[in-house]
Image (cartoon, rainbow, N blue to C red; front, side, top):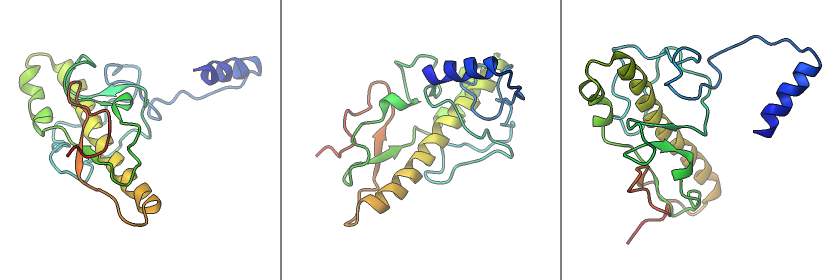
Length: 175
């Protein structure tokens, strides 16, 4: 946080002009009017169905605000949610597990769960898309890193569940 304030003070002090862009690092889909959360259309495939390939819209955001949480629930203490503080610290160990996607029903239940609230359906679709996409990209990054860090092989089983009550303290397989 300090660097953000320092940057703001420095550019203001030196009269540096900026162009406002909204697509570089949106924080939360709830900020639909002030950030770039208009990239999914109604025909988007279920991003939680395929275990490996991210389902990308035509113009996804360049980055996201990593300190936020993304998923279907409205409360961080409930359900499946991608949240950086749920990632076990031993995730890079050769024997550690990869992330497991939430059930595909996270996506398919949005319309039913929030029937009549089009605004909430809209941002929940973005939140669940981001949850499943971050998990898939996370697994791709883990694979790339472990390919370099683990010359004798590594575990690729998808078993780390990012759920409020089910996230393990360790990424290691439980016997």
